[in-house]
Amino acid sequence: MKEIDLGSWEEFEEQLKRLEKELCNQKTPSEFLYRGQGRTSWELLTTLERYGKKNLSLREYFQFLSVIKPQIESFTGAEWNILSQDGFDEWLRENNTLLPHAFGSSKDFRGIYSYMVELRHNGFPSPLLDWSRSPYIAAYFAFKNVLQCEEDVSIFVYLESTSQIGLKGGGSNKPDIYRFGPYVKTDRRHFIQQSEYTICIIFDNEWRYASHEEAFARNDPNQDVLWKFNIPWSERLKVLKLLEG
Image (cartoon, rainbow, N blue to C red; front, side):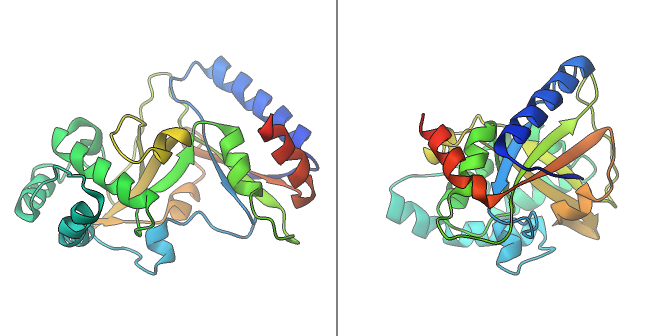
């Protein structure tokens, strides 16, 4: 991760222009994602990690999703077509050597993804780390806190791959980040916020959710590249006024 302290919002906009120019020169199909956080000291944690459930296996988390599904459908009136527990176990066995790439290629996971995003937007602890395709939406989430804070705010910029064909490498014994695209039927906030999501997984006797921070700590120049821009909280009113326009 590249951490950069800035003195103003205008400096952040200049950094964005620089990154966009570099991306254009690299001719990579990957696009930037953005995430705003209200304090520089906050780590990149999923709500599942904040809830204290670290290193939970994919199978264990799916059990939680299955148990609450009848109640969620009863209260919302919506239905989600997801695998049974046995079906998910079979899916894991069939794709054991293919994860995380199987997330994108498997139609069996699409319903689960839709359901997970719905729960994520309604406060259920989730392994999905949410991002936006807009730096301005990320800025809103960074500056929305009305209480004055001595810390700067942070806007993270994530690039999945610098490859000209978008390829990523990795090994199952290391944390691996997978990016989920925007095309999913779910909560309307997903579309308003121009949301996309990432998960981080690792193989430790079985597939488990892992820490994004650990994956980013590898500082691989070719994939999962992350910039952290720290902007003074004193820029808050200027930024929010800009966003209103």
